[in-house]
Length: 310
Image (cartoon, rainbow, N blue to C red; front, side, top):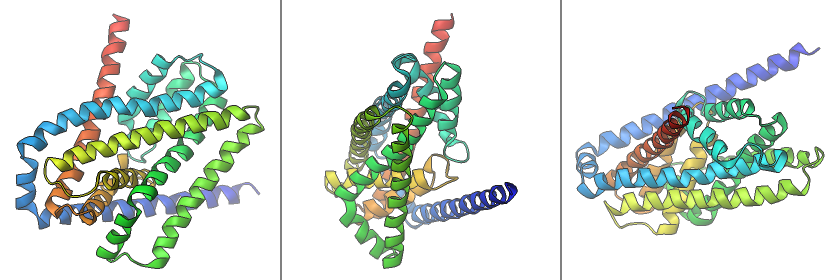
């Protein structure tokens, strides 16, 4: 009697992974075509002196604002276990595992974080709460900023790229609402587990921290775009960055949202008024910024750990 649900679950997971792989490949094809169509102009954009100077500066800034996500994760742990793990140790674990997101499945950084924090003494209850809280609240924060700041831009992008099918738009909205509902329901289950009011308080704190992270990340996209073109309002570009991160995050199987995030950025930035070569260059530059920022955080943690062990 118990083997049937297991088989169905495996089949469903396989379908989801296959669907995510198809979306990721389609996004990579879209990005490849965008590069091919404007290769000459894109080369000139990528070697622009201001653009090249902005990349390392933005990477350093990204490494700094990324700590907001780590602090939010720590706050979820504290809500259950108290400050037993310590903020410094929690941020160390967070930084060390950030580069795991580039492994296949797009969730290995969370898996690695769970294992390392468990070995450091965090309880399974706290880690489960932090996992559910992060997944639900970070999606809520990104979705809220995207909807508030960039919804008209993406409506235009749907029409421009032939995706103005009302059923597709309704499906995307329904999927987002379903994910939010599931996450919220799981989050409220911890009221029964004795967390109660603390779950609501820490969720509000985390929402603010995630919102600040997405605003900061969006401003980095603004900085990159301004080195190439002055099109697009700041608020719109911040919303586009949040939407690109969100869609790259929820597509299963895309390591770090690779391809998917770039495709959404190119579509959104082009709809906001950036010329296609500039939009493509900003999307590629943003990927380089986030990879360098993640690597920088992991490197700093490695150096600090070696210093402690010396």
